[in-house]
Image (cartoon, rainbow, N blue to C red; front, side):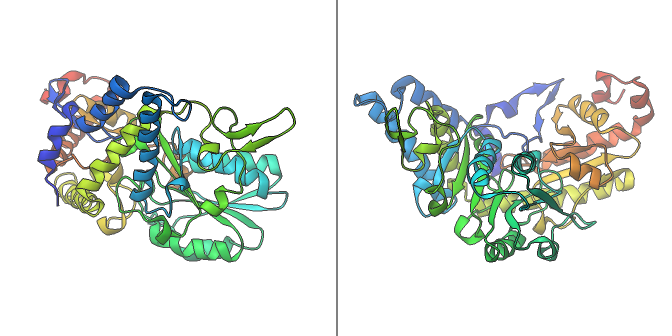
Length: 426
């Protein structure tokens, strides 16, 4: 196991003081903080190697091209892809899934076909499929969750059939923290028996657990750099090479082609045909640095660290808050990630989030881009605390103690009588 206290030295932002309190950053499911090593790698590229890639024979262009291609190689290794050219850089996981929907989907989904989506999905792995279905005259069918917030293989088994063309499923819920990887492995085998493809949203899973695309058995996997210590504006679509080679570009333009005449076009090899225009080279360099950082820590250790934080959170909430706070999802840290969605009895989730900010604690409030899931749970929203490699038990203590104070001031918070003085308990 790594030492999170040593890791924190790489993140200067964690020393910030918010409203007189040291920052406690618990909004990692939205975006993670960036270590000095990642920022330095991006700065070095722009200060010493900045040039466009694949467009020049001069030294800077050659250096930039090599750095950009190496980033593909490192990401491929990180998810155990068969080859670096199975890795396509996108802006984020949202674009990655849209790429699949409007390349493979437009070519293979037609009237009467079915797209299987779970009610647990982030909108990024739901709305593109609904739009595709509307365009192509297909039908979206939904896999429900159990009352405990889990997906079961049997629920997929009941819905998949010869009309199924796509199964879209998250590897980890961004609300409930439910890890579905084991179920997805079985579902992928079943989907392939029907000739369907499986598109996995790994935005919450890949940054937090060892990921092996060969073992998962899915056909496409999307994830975002900014949730795994990397910069914003860089994401990844991994796809099976044999499928990617059959697809035409999602966007067309510079660097997507080998040859263009007034009558025809010959598309470039993968992955370049899917990376139209000038790419985010600095973002790719930063993502490579983030991958190196995580590989050095070891993804098994990242997973164990978060399990320990979740276990400790349940313990502290139970000891100090009792039934005043309701946590959603499975209570076993072995089957859930470092995401904890909850509500405080009698208080709106936004009120709790704003009150926690007065203690310097950053959490997310709302429906977390998962409206159907919240409605399935009978909720108008929730407070979400989410952990990463630099979070420590003392921050869990701060969260627990702050919530305890908020509960004692519940009536005043409802009427707006409490302001910044809440952080002193006055």
